[in-house]
Amino acid sequence: NPVEQQFGFIQLMPNHAFTYEEILKITHNFETHIGEGGSGSVYYGLLNNGNEVAVKVLKDWRQRGSKEFVAE
Image (tube, rainbow, N blue to C red; front, side):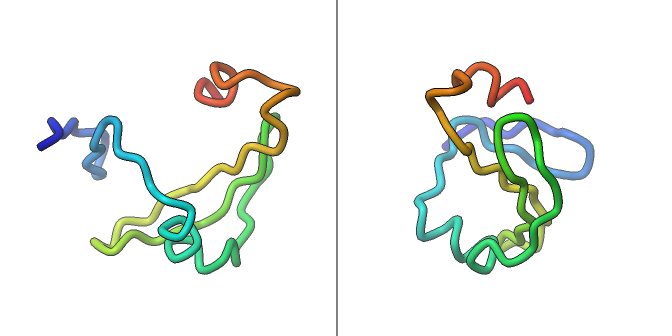
């Protein structure tokens, strides 16, 4: 049972990992592109509980390390 942290109006659950299939469902197959960061594209998503989320997809893990991706 992860400890929840309050961040604005969204409850974050640390260390929760989504499967690729879950990400496809959340983003409706990456339907809505909402932005581009230095390390990847950002897509709109909707969780089962109604929370809207931004899902970033790393474009090349060799080009930038995971620390930069997380920091961004």
